[in-house]
Image (cartoon, rainbow over all chains, first blue to last red; front, side, top):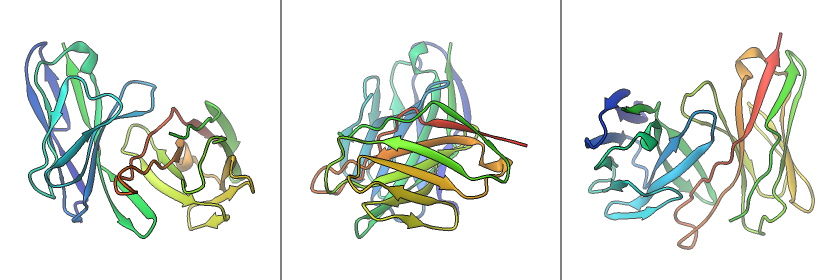
Length: 114
Length: 114
């Protein structure tokens, strides 16, 4: 099983450039999430989605946009890259089994903005 | 949202039990305690979760105090591969429990020493 797949793994952007971080899951999970992790810090939730067509802001949404047109895909868009967005980005997905949910994470995209 | 407090770092000798504490004094009655770990910048990995009873699986045990204000993750026989950042998370439910957001703190860096 592929699980959660993130592309690209690494990227260098210039200030002001735009890009889309791709995230796909093949587990038919309803819930998907984007996190960022700055060096030496914990993960911060950027956006999340409870299903196709539904998204909501997390802790640090400024400078990002998301869409969820299908269950499988949850791309994260950076419109005007800034050095403060240099980080490792993790996508995750989960489903709910009764009261329990287990999130599965991708391997991350390491983004540097120069 | 219920917050968690963890020590920033701990050491453990290889083969010994590692006991990682977590305080969550503002937890509410229907919130679960989850533990994840992150090995060297990989995506976080689910370990275990619980509500009020002690739980055990193939990876670890979770002990939750009777008042639910704190918990301890126990790795019974720590190995070098258990060196990681361990996150204690109280699961936040929004939309009547649908979103299953996971809000990460800074975690505990467990260093298993040979």
